[in-house]
Image: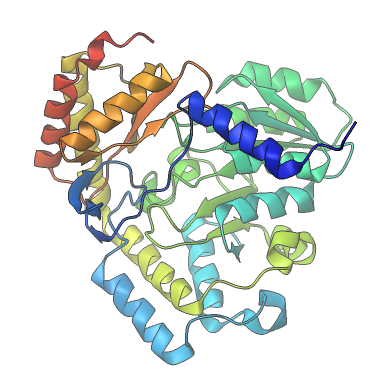
Length: 394
Protein backbone atom coordinates (compact mmCIF):
# COMPACT_ATOMS: atom_id res chain seq x y z
CA UNK A 1 0.00 0.00 0.00
CA UNK A 2 1.53 3.38 -0.97
CA UNK A 3 2.48 5.82 1.77
CA UNK A 4 -0.14 8.62 2.24
CA UNK A 5 0.99 12.00 0.92
CA UNK A 6 0.82 14.78 3.50
CA UNK A 7 -0.18 17.70 1.28
CA UNK A 8 -2.93 15.65 -0.36
CA UNK A 9 -4.32 14.74 3.05
CA UNK A 10 -4.22 18.38 4.10
CA UNK A 11 -6.10 19.37 0.96
CA UNK A 12 -8.84 16.86 1.76
CA UNK A 13 -9.16 18.18 5.31
CA UNK A 14 -9.32 21.76 4.04
CA UNK A 15 -12.04 20.85 1.53
CA UNK A 16 -14.04 19.13 4.26
CA UNK A 17 -13.86 22.22 6.43
CA UNK A 18 -14.98 24.42 3.53
CA UNK A 19 -17.92 22.12 2.81
CA UNK A 20 -19.00 22.39 6.46
CA UNK A 21 -18.82 26.21 6.21
CA UNK A 22 -16.12 26.25 8.86
CA UNK A 23 -13.23 27.45 6.73
CA UNK A 24 -11.29 30.45 8.01
CA UNK A 25 -10.48 33.37 5.71
CA UNK A 26 -7.99 36.22 5.93
CA UNK A 27 -9.27 39.77 5.80
CA UNK A 28 -6.85 42.53 4.84
CA UNK A 29 -7.37 45.81 6.66
CA UNK A 30 -6.14 48.71 4.55
CA UNK A 31 -6.41 51.30 7.31
CA UNK A 32 -7.51 51.57 10.93
CA UNK A 33 -8.88 54.71 12.53
CA UNK A 34 -9.99 54.18 16.12
CA UNK A 35 -12.91 51.72 16.02
CA UNK A 36 -13.20 52.11 12.23
CA UNK A 37 -11.42 49.95 9.67
CA UNK A 38 -11.20 50.07 5.90
CA UNK A 39 -11.57 46.72 4.16
CA UNK A 40 -12.18 45.98 0.49
CA UNK A 41 -12.86 49.63 -0.15
CA UNK A 42 -15.49 49.92 2.60
CA UNK A 43 -15.37 51.78 5.90
CA UNK A 44 -16.65 49.49 8.67
CA UNK A 45 -17.33 50.06 12.36
CA UNK A 46 -15.46 47.21 14.03
CA UNK A 47 -16.69 45.31 17.07
CA UNK A 48 -14.06 42.57 16.95
CA UNK A 49 -10.81 44.16 18.08
CA UNK A 50 -9.09 43.34 21.38
CA UNK A 51 -7.74 46.90 21.69
CA UNK A 52 -9.92 47.28 24.79
CA UNK A 53 -8.53 50.62 25.99
CA UNK A 54 -8.20 52.13 22.52
CA UNK A 55 -4.43 52.58 22.92
CA UNK A 56 -3.17 51.02 19.68
CA UNK A 57 -3.16 54.39 17.88
CA UNK A 58 -2.52 56.63 20.87
CA UNK A 59 -0.17 59.47 19.87
CA UNK A 60 2.03 58.93 22.93
CA UNK A 61 2.62 55.28 22.01
CA UNK A 62 3.41 56.25 18.43
CA UNK A 63 5.83 58.94 19.62
CA UNK A 64 7.58 56.53 22.02
CA UNK A 65 7.98 53.95 19.26
CA UNK A 66 9.35 56.53 16.80
CA UNK A 67 11.78 57.98 19.31
CA UNK A 68 13.16 54.57 20.24
CA UNK A 69 13.38 53.51 16.59
CA UNK A 70 15.30 56.67 15.77
CA UNK A 71 17.72 55.90 18.60
CA UNK A 72 18.11 52.12 18.29
CA UNK A 73 16.73 51.08 14.90
CA UNK A 74 14.09 48.43 14.38
CA UNK A 75 15.14 44.84 15.05
CA UNK A 76 16.94 43.77 18.23
CA UNK A 77 19.20 41.58 16.10
CA UNK A 78 19.54 38.72 18.54
CA UNK A 79 18.01 36.63 21.28
CA UNK A 80 17.80 38.22 24.72
CA UNK A 81 20.59 36.03 26.07
CA UNK A 82 23.02 36.88 23.28
CA UNK A 83 22.97 40.64 22.73
CA UNK A 84 19.30 41.39 22.00
CA UNK A 85 18.27 42.52 25.49
CA UNK A 86 18.16 46.31 25.29
CA UNK A 87 17.52 48.96 27.91
CA UNK A 88 13.93 49.35 26.69
CA UNK A 89 13.30 45.65 27.34
CA UNK A 90 14.72 45.91 30.84
CA UNK A 91 12.69 49.04 31.62
CA UNK A 92 9.48 47.42 30.37
CA UNK A 93 10.06 44.31 32.48
CA UNK A 94 10.55 46.48 35.56
CA UNK A 95 7.34 48.40 34.84
CA UNK A 96 5.33 45.22 34.32
CA UNK A 97 6.64 43.65 37.52
CA UNK A 98 5.76 46.74 39.55
CA UNK A 99 2.29 47.01 37.99
CA UNK A 100 1.40 43.38 38.69
CA UNK A 101 2.99 43.31 42.16
CA UNK A 102 5.65 40.73 41.28
CA UNK A 103 9.39 40.65 41.90
CA UNK A 104 10.32 40.20 38.27
CA UNK A 105 8.92 39.90 34.76
CA UNK A 106 10.23 38.29 31.59
CA UNK A 107 9.31 39.33 28.04
CA UNK A 108 8.26 36.89 25.33
CA UNK A 109 7.53 37.57 21.66
CA UNK A 110 3.90 36.34 21.88
CA UNK A 111 1.48 35.01 24.45
CA UNK A 112 1.55 31.63 22.74
CA UNK A 113 5.32 31.46 23.17
CA UNK A 114 5.06 32.61 26.78
CA UNK A 115 2.68 29.83 27.72
CA UNK A 116 4.52 27.14 25.77
CA UNK A 117 7.86 28.12 27.28
CA UNK A 118 6.59 28.48 30.83
CA UNK A 119 4.86 25.11 30.90
CA UNK A 120 7.75 23.36 29.18
CA UNK A 121 10.09 24.80 31.82
CA UNK A 122 7.89 23.99 34.82
CA UNK A 123 6.44 20.60 33.91
CA UNK A 124 7.98 17.19 33.28
CA UNK A 125 6.72 13.74 32.42
CA UNK A 126 4.86 12.32 35.39
CA UNK A 127 3.66 15.75 36.53
CA UNK A 128 -0.01 16.73 36.55
CA UNK A 129 -1.47 19.74 34.72
CA UNK A 130 -5.12 20.52 35.44
CA UNK A 131 -6.89 22.98 33.13
CA UNK A 132 -10.29 24.51 32.46
CA UNK A 133 -11.85 23.01 29.33
CA UNK A 134 -12.25 26.48 27.81
CA UNK A 135 -8.64 27.54 28.28
CA UNK A 136 -6.86 29.12 25.34
CA UNK A 137 -5.23 26.70 22.93
CA UNK A 138 -1.69 27.72 23.94
CA UNK A 139 -2.24 26.59 27.54
CA UNK A 140 -3.44 23.21 26.33
CA UNK A 141 -0.62 22.92 23.80
CA UNK A 142 1.93 23.90 26.43
CA UNK A 143 0.85 21.10 28.75
CA UNK A 144 0.89 18.54 25.95
CA UNK A 145 4.33 19.67 24.78
CA UNK A 146 5.71 19.32 28.31
CA UNK A 147 4.78 15.63 28.49
CA UNK A 148 2.82 16.13 31.72
CA UNK A 149 -0.47 14.34 32.34
CA UNK A 150 -3.12 16.83 31.15
CA UNK A 151 -6.51 16.68 32.88
CA UNK A 152 -9.31 19.08 31.95
CA UNK A 153 -12.23 20.07 34.15
CA UNK A 154 -15.69 21.38 33.27
CA UNK A 155 -15.66 25.12 32.69
CA UNK A 156 -15.31 27.13 35.92
CA UNK A 157 -16.15 24.05 38.02
CA UNK A 158 -13.88 24.20 41.07
CA UNK A 159 -15.17 20.90 42.46
CA UNK A 160 -14.29 19.18 39.19
CA UNK A 161 -10.81 20.73 39.31
CA UNK A 162 -10.40 19.39 42.85
CA UNK A 163 -11.31 15.88 41.72
CA UNK A 164 -8.70 16.05 38.98
CA UNK A 165 -6.01 17.18 41.41
CA UNK A 166 -6.90 14.52 43.95
CA UNK A 167 -6.76 11.85 41.26
CA UNK A 168 -2.95 12.01 41.39
CA UNK A 169 -2.04 13.37 44.83
CA UNK A 170 1.65 12.42 44.65
CA UNK A 171 2.51 14.28 41.42
CA UNK A 172 3.85 17.82 41.14
CA UNK A 173 0.80 19.77 39.97
CA UNK A 174 0.09 22.94 38.02
CA UNK A 175 -3.45 24.30 37.73
CA UNK A 176 -3.71 26.69 34.77
CA UNK A 177 -6.66 28.88 33.83
CA UNK A 178 -7.53 31.89 31.73
CA UNK A 179 -8.35 34.90 33.86
CA UNK A 180 -10.94 36.12 31.36
CA UNK A 181 -12.05 33.50 28.84
CA UNK A 182 -11.45 34.73 25.32
CA UNK A 183 -14.58 33.33 23.66
CA UNK A 184 -17.09 33.47 26.55
CA UNK A 185 -15.89 36.66 28.24
CA UNK A 186 -16.55 35.42 31.77
CA UNK A 187 -14.03 35.58 34.60
CA UNK A 188 -12.52 32.48 36.19
CA UNK A 189 -13.36 31.75 39.86
CA UNK A 190 -9.83 32.72 40.83
CA UNK A 191 -10.32 33.06 44.59
CA UNK A 192 -11.78 29.57 44.81
CA UNK A 193 -9.09 28.12 42.56
CA UNK A 194 -6.37 29.77 44.63
CA UNK A 195 -7.84 28.27 47.82
CA UNK A 196 -7.97 24.86 46.12
CA UNK A 197 -4.33 25.11 45.10
CA UNK A 198 -3.34 25.98 48.67
CA UNK A 199 -5.15 22.91 50.01
CA UNK A 200 -3.74 20.60 47.36
CA UNK A 201 -0.22 22.09 47.23
CA UNK A 202 -0.59 22.85 43.53
CA UNK A 203 0.86 25.84 41.68
CA UNK A 204 -1.68 28.25 40.16
CA UNK A 205 -0.96 29.84 36.77
CA UNK A 206 -3.24 32.51 35.30
CA UNK A 207 -3.26 33.63 31.68
CA UNK A 208 -4.55 37.21 31.97
CA UNK A 209 -4.39 38.15 28.29
CA UNK A 210 -7.91 39.60 28.33
CA UNK A 211 -7.92 40.94 31.89
CA UNK A 212 -4.75 43.04 32.10
CA UNK A 213 -5.47 46.73 31.66
CA UNK A 214 -9.23 46.24 31.97
CA UNK A 215 -9.90 44.73 35.40
CA UNK A 216 -8.62 45.44 38.91
CA UNK A 217 -7.17 48.48 40.64
CA UNK A 218 -5.11 50.50 38.15
CA UNK A 219 -5.97 47.89 35.53
CA UNK A 220 -3.62 45.32 37.05
CA UNK A 221 -5.88 42.51 35.81
CA UNK A 222 -8.18 39.71 36.89
CA UNK A 223 -5.84 38.52 39.65
CA UNK A 224 -5.89 41.96 41.25
CA UNK A 225 -9.65 42.12 40.63
CA UNK A 226 -9.99 38.91 42.69
CA UNK A 227 -7.87 40.39 45.50
CA UNK A 228 -5.12 37.79 45.12
CA UNK A 229 -1.41 38.37 45.59
CA UNK A 230 1.77 36.95 44.08
CA UNK A 231 1.93 34.18 46.66
CA UNK A 232 -1.53 32.96 45.75
CA UNK A 233 -0.94 33.23 41.99
CA UNK A 234 2.79 32.57 41.60
CA UNK A 235 2.73 32.33 37.79
CA UNK A 236 1.09 35.18 35.87
CA UNK A 237 1.13 35.55 32.10
CA UNK A 238 -0.37 38.42 30.14
CA UNK A 239 -0.09 39.92 26.69
CA UNK A 240 0.83 43.36 25.41
CA UNK A 241 -1.23 43.19 22.23
CA UNK A 242 -4.73 43.58 23.62
CA UNK A 243 -5.57 46.30 26.15
CA UNK A 244 -2.05 47.74 25.84
CA UNK A 245 -2.35 48.10 22.08
CA UNK A 246 1.14 46.79 21.26
CA UNK A 247 2.50 43.26 20.77
CA UNK A 248 4.31 40.64 22.79
CA UNK A 249 3.77 39.09 26.20
CA UNK A 250 5.35 38.54 29.59
CA UNK A 251 5.44 36.21 32.55
CA UNK A 252 5.66 37.74 36.02
CA UNK A 253 6.44 36.13 39.34
CA UNK A 254 9.19 35.55 41.87
CA UNK A 255 12.86 36.04 41.11
CA UNK A 256 13.22 32.27 41.31
CA UNK A 257 10.55 31.72 38.66
CA UNK A 258 12.08 34.23 36.26
CA UNK A 259 15.59 32.90 36.79
CA UNK A 260 14.30 29.42 36.05
CA UNK A 261 12.47 30.50 32.90
CA UNK A 262 15.58 32.28 31.69
CA UNK A 263 17.45 28.98 31.91
CA UNK A 264 14.81 26.52 30.69
CA UNK A 265 12.04 28.24 28.67
CA UNK A 266 13.05 27.28 25.15
CA UNK A 267 10.66 29.76 23.49
CA UNK A 268 12.51 32.53 25.34
CA UNK A 269 16.04 31.26 24.87
CA UNK A 270 15.90 30.42 21.19
CA UNK A 271 14.08 33.36 19.64
CA UNK A 272 14.92 36.92 18.69
CA UNK A 273 13.95 39.59 21.21
CA UNK A 274 11.07 41.89 20.27
CA UNK A 275 12.05 45.22 18.67
CA UNK A 276 13.21 47.61 21.40
CA UNK A 277 11.01 50.36 19.92
CA UNK A 278 7.97 48.16 20.52
CA UNK A 279 9.06 47.69 24.13
CA UNK A 280 9.27 51.47 24.49
CA UNK A 281 5.72 51.86 23.17
CA UNK A 282 4.47 49.12 25.50
CA UNK A 283 6.07 50.82 28.50
CA UNK A 284 4.23 54.01 27.63
CA UNK A 285 1.03 52.00 27.32
CA UNK A 286 1.54 50.58 30.80
CA UNK A 287 1.83 54.11 32.20
CA UNK A 288 -1.33 55.24 30.41
CA UNK A 289 -3.29 52.16 31.45
CA UNK A 290 -2.36 52.73 35.07
CA UNK A 291 -2.95 56.48 35.10
CA UNK A 292 -6.03 56.94 32.92
CA UNK A 293 -8.83 55.20 34.80
CA UNK A 294 -11.32 57.08 32.65
CA UNK A 295 -10.72 54.63 29.83
CA UNK A 296 -11.83 51.72 32.00
CA UNK A 297 -14.78 53.70 33.31
CA UNK A 298 -15.90 54.55 29.78
CA UNK A 299 -15.54 50.92 28.71
CA UNK A 300 -17.57 49.75 31.71
CA UNK A 301 -20.33 52.18 30.79
CA UNK A 302 -20.41 50.93 27.20
CA UNK A 303 -20.58 47.32 28.39
CA UNK A 304 -23.55 48.15 30.62
CA UNK A 305 -25.27 50.02 27.81
CA UNK A 306 -24.84 47.11 25.41
CA UNK A 307 -25.99 44.49 27.90
CA UNK A 308 -29.03 46.51 28.89
CA UNK A 309 -30.02 47.01 25.27
CA UNK A 310 -29.34 43.39 24.30
CA UNK A 311 -31.42 42.16 27.23
CA UNK A 312 -34.32 44.41 26.26
CA UNK A 313 -34.15 42.99 22.73
CA UNK A 314 -34.12 39.42 24.03
CA UNK A 315 -30.82 38.67 22.31
CA UNK A 316 -29.05 35.38 23.22
CA UNK A 317 -26.51 37.14 25.41
CA UNK A 318 -23.92 35.09 27.28
CA UNK A 319 -23.23 35.89 30.97
CA UNK A 320 -20.20 38.16 30.57
CA UNK A 321 -19.46 41.48 32.24
CA UNK A 322 -16.17 42.10 30.43
CA UNK A 323 -15.44 43.73 27.07
CA UNK A 324 -16.12 40.38 25.38
CA UNK A 325 -19.87 40.11 24.75
CA UNK A 326 -20.77 36.95 22.81
CA UNK A 327 -24.18 36.28 21.33
CA UNK A 328 -24.69 32.52 21.28
CA UNK A 329 -26.42 31.43 18.06
CA UNK A 330 -25.61 27.72 18.10
CA UNK A 331 -25.55 26.92 14.39
CA UNK A 332 -22.36 27.85 12.52
CA UNK A 333 -24.25 28.77 9.36
CA UNK A 334 -26.58 31.08 11.25
CA UNK A 335 -23.63 32.83 12.91
CA UNK A 336 -21.92 33.29 9.56
CA UNK A 337 -25.05 34.70 7.94
CA UNK A 338 -25.56 37.10 10.86
CA UNK A 339 -21.98 38.33 10.50
CA UNK A 340 -22.48 38.92 6.76
CA UNK A 341 -25.74 40.76 7.38
CA UNK A 342 -24.07 43.07 9.89
CA UNK A 343 -21.24 43.76 7.45
CA UNK A 344 -23.80 44.74 4.84
CA UNK A 345 -24.95 47.36 7.38
CA UNK A 346 -21.38 48.64 7.81
CA UNK A 347 -20.53 46.73 11.00
CA UNK A 348 -17.66 44.26 11.35
CA UNK A 349 -18.55 41.50 13.83
CA UNK A 350 -16.84 38.15 13.41
CA UNK A 351 -18.63 34.80 13.59
CA UNK A 352 -16.78 32.33 15.81
CA UNK A 353 -17.38 28.73 14.75
CA UNK A 354 -16.04 25.27 15.58
CA UNK A 355 -13.35 24.17 16.17
CA UNK A 356 -12.58 27.46 17.96
CA UNK A 357 -15.71 26.85 20.05
CA UNK A 358 -17.51 23.53 20.67
CA UNK A 359 -19.99 22.14 18.19
CA UNK A 360 -23.39 23.78 18.53
CA UNK A 361 -21.93 26.89 20.22
CA UNK A 362 -21.18 29.16 17.25
CA UNK A 363 -21.54 32.81 18.14
CA UNK A 364 -21.01 36.43 17.29
CA UNK A 365 -18.06 37.54 19.40
CA UNK A 366 -18.71 41.22 20.03
CA UNK A 367 -15.95 43.21 21.69
CA UNK A 368 -16.28 46.73 23.00
CA UNK A 369 -13.46 49.21 23.47
CA UNK A 370 -12.91 52.61 25.01
CA UNK A 371 -12.57 53.91 21.45
CA UNK A 372 -16.28 53.25 20.86
CA UNK A 373 -18.97 55.82 21.61
CA UNK A 374 -22.50 55.34 22.90
CA UNK A 375 -23.83 56.08 19.43
CA UNK A 376 -21.73 53.20 18.07
CA UNK A 377 -23.26 50.80 20.60
CA UNK A 378 -26.75 52.02 19.74
CA UNK A 379 -26.07 51.50 16.05
CA UNK A 380 -24.95 47.94 16.72
CA UNK A 381 -28.03 47.20 18.82
CA UNK A 382 -30.31 48.60 16.11
CA UNK A 383 -28.65 46.37 13.51
CA UNK A 384 -28.88 43.31 15.75
CA UNK A 385 -32.56 43.96 16.42
CA UNK A 386 -33.23 43.82 12.69
CA UNK A 387 -31.67 40.34 12.45
CA UNK A 388 -34.26 38.85 14.85
CA UNK A 389 -31.59 36.88 16.70
CA UNK A 390 -33.88 36.50 19.69
CA UNK A 391 -35.44 33.63 17.75
CA UNK A 392 -32.07 31.86 17.31
CA UNK A 393 -32.15 28.17 18.32
CA UNK A 394 -29.40 27.55 20.90
